[in-house]
Length: 214
View 1 (cartoon, one colour):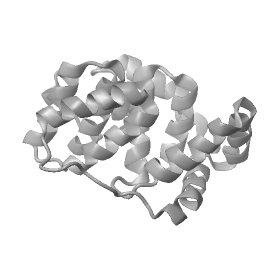
View 2 (cartoon, rainbow, N blue to C red):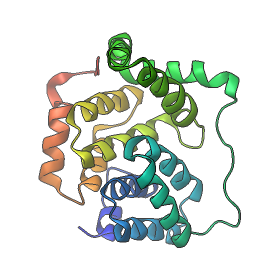
View 3 (cartoon, rainbow, N blue to C red):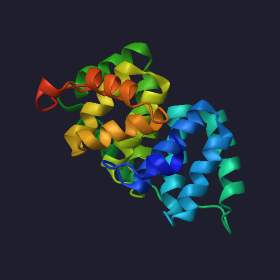
């Protein structure tokens, strides 16, 4: 499915769909497709700042090497007169905000997920809470629902089904609709509607009721 066709689909706003497309193509290192998403966003006068925030998220979800390469392609397709700076919460606010966001995403599984991370490595736990959530995901440049919708998309592209389920439930808990999540997954899978429905049904079954865990 072409980008124009995906942007014309209902269920997800075009600006958020473009963020999902950028994140998913960053993960795949599909730089021609990545550039087309950036150009489509620029042509439609989407906010450049939203793409900047998404690329900062890509550091977490796609890794430093791909994120840095993505920034190179981004600057070629949509140059900035000066490098963007700042935008995070005050350093004194980040730890508490990160813990609060993590708890909002994982609900009653907040403590078990944190225990799991500590069980793997204490530094992993601290990085996720302090750097990922506290410094990046709490940035006010994108709201928490949009960030979770983007996360669902990129996790679908990665076929990370356990994490997809956790973030799909977190997104729903924060207020995302099933239609938004469905379209994020379909966008990340380049228009593969049957596979998108399959992944979302596994992550967030229709008959589950209100999400209550990661």
